[in-house]
Image 1 (cartoon, rainbow, N blue to C red):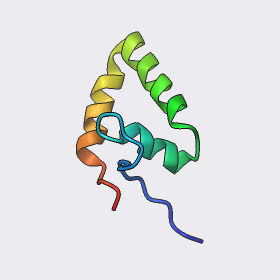
Image 2 (image 1 turned 135 degrees about the vertical axis):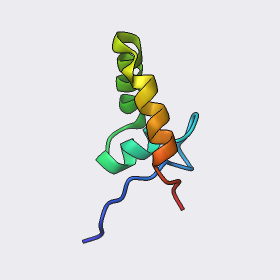
Image 3 (image 1 turned 90 degrees about the vertical axis):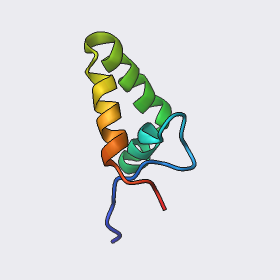
Length: 62
């Protein structure tokens, strides 16, 4: 069984590829991840901070 690793997506990216990478890791549609992030940004603002931290910390897909 292959080990799953979290990477920023190169092929499915709008800004930094964080949502695309999360979607691949959890095997869900990237649009769902983007909607969840948008709701987090609009409701409490923590989504923008979390996105920027993940963009800096997550390695890019090879």
